[in-house]
Length: 418
Image (cartoon, rainbow, N blue to C red; front, side, top):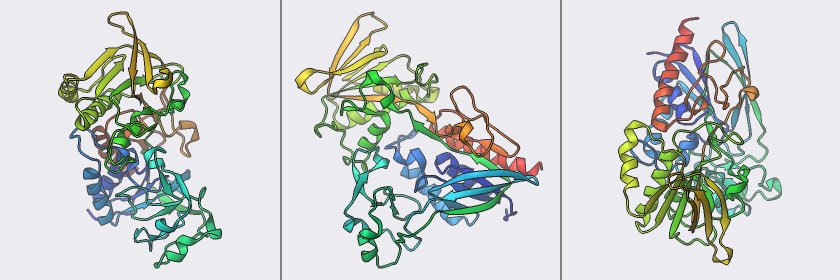
């Protein structure tokens, strides 16, 4: 189909947002992606492997990136947010606020700037488990293929070593924030999710004990491009753990934190146990759970991992996590719901299965949207405004792509009905 001039604004550049934009653009509509991070790909880019094929995310994302680059109907803005959207004559007047990247389109990602930068920052892509320079490349296959500068840590013109070595004139330390205005005929909210802040769960020791990590951190530890090159090891001393406890529903199904179930945490933990045993089949894995929840098509995977030697499942909610004196180990205390006995399990490392929180809160959005009890957005808002992916409910990657394709179709239908 030829371009018909209608524009669909997609808020969020993760797997759902990219899929919505691609499907709409390939149907002949203009699509604009607005992403607040410095790269497209969202949470999926941070995974080691994802369901259903348990393959690295770059497999599917590279295809999406290629489709985006090849389609002139798709435009994307990174380090950008939707500031306002006002209904006018059947469409929306949208205002985008784009933060300065300090690196322009001349960048070839050669890396010479990074070599001379004297300042380090925590690497948020790896959840702070390692560091990058103040001028950094977000991740191996980042799109756009361009460095970015962290304004909070960069020394600016008082240093400017990166400017001196860049032979392409790509670094602009005086770059300013800018405002872009456009007209959108439909808006799709693909704002995604954030992992629940495990530091709020006082009894589970995150932030107090270095070897208590979260499930999203485990993904990065297992990833070949992660902070340890794919070696699962204790943050405290870099040693391979002999035993690991996986604590389910860390903050989830809890009226003091998140009342909802994120539906994919159990599957993710079985995947993490598989990572562990792929590295060393002798590592003992303990999984403390309330209920095991796995969608039908993944039941065989759950059963195969559960049956592996050195895998122990304990039905019981964890009450607390403590250190074992000078031994440097951790003790998990829980009540076995089947036997009624109290369990005190000593392990080398603990992984908390924190759930999904909606990244967008209904009250803070520039478009009037309603949400359900847990804060996830309802499927549709004002005329021409839709939601997709984890913005509206916790779900897996495969389901997100299906839902995003449907969102593109619904956005097109809303335009045709005007």
